[in-house]
Image (cartoon, rainbow, N blue to C red; front, top):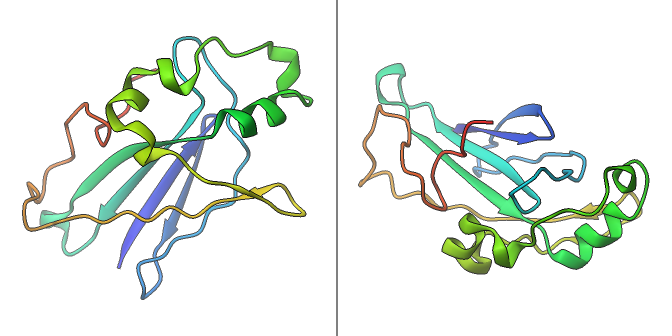
Length: 141
């Protein structure tokens, strides 16, 4: 078992995975900020022992059509139109659509599933993930 955290709009949520390695989150669609496409950060921590924890950080992006629909509504619309689309975001361009969610409309909003696989045999066990690529730590804000 491990734990997963998600950060959206300054809100952090932590969830322990079940016996199948699944964690579920309910959150709001993120807003936007200058110079980045709309995205949500997530982090996976392993907990084999305190001295052998592994951390993986990445980001997930939303289809432009979904973001357009959500951001046309209150309270998002009061912020104005975002200044960057996925195709112009540097992190999205590095990963392509591999980090793109495929949400489906539900009675409550949208739902999406995203699978993550980690090869811990090659991980620098015990050290946080320090890379800046598509799977790397998000920039400080």
